[in-house]
Image 1 (cartoon, rainbow, N blue to C red):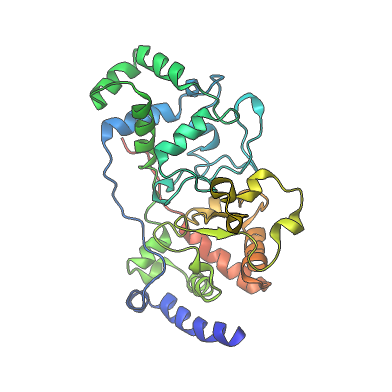
Image 2: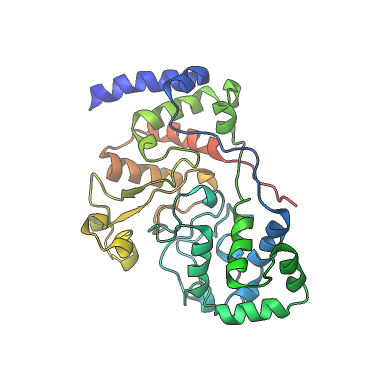
Length: 318
């Protein structure tokens, strides 16, 4: 394996140091497009709904409660807190760039942002809402009624509420990270140490799962390929079954959607169980359980330096 790594590392390092060459050889990661094309009226309506606590069953929490746009699009908790102060089953992933994922939720049970919202709204621990009541009060609200009428021919419906919020979420992309600038040809956007970190990221095989526009979010993978993550951690929960909860296929036990690494330096803690409090811990876990290796201090620091370049830009679009 060492020989294979060494030969791959030479190619990867050449790619990292020379963006033009890397493009020719086929980069595993692509930059986020700079523009989005979402309806402005629906986006503004969805923004209001996203932050409205009245959508929850107890009238105390909003979507932004677990997906705080000022904190990387998540809440910074090991697991989130739903209505009535009850803990949820898993760590809340960031809402930033969620529109770029091929599935939603850690177990991938939702095919769209609309479906994801529906399930969260109806979940007794998360939002605990009743759609009939929600539609009724929004339709009577002096602010929302006209806004829905302007955005949707059929006014306030469950489907339109879901679509408005999802439309807003589709604007929550974070383009123009320093790494995106580098991929577009600006070699000066990264330091030599960061370029080396990217070369190692590819050479060790991290990019086999964390690739594409969202640097993840486009495939499923088992947590614990090379070692028994759950056996070592202990205290298993139903949520640890991952994709198995959706398919009931034995091969899907402990399989999860690969998370996006965009803005990863701002979205601790990590993994579905929130068990890694820092990037240092997360990198060590990935090396041990996914790669069957122990990273050197130099390799760990180098890869983390690269990961820090994945933080993009977000500003409220009116």
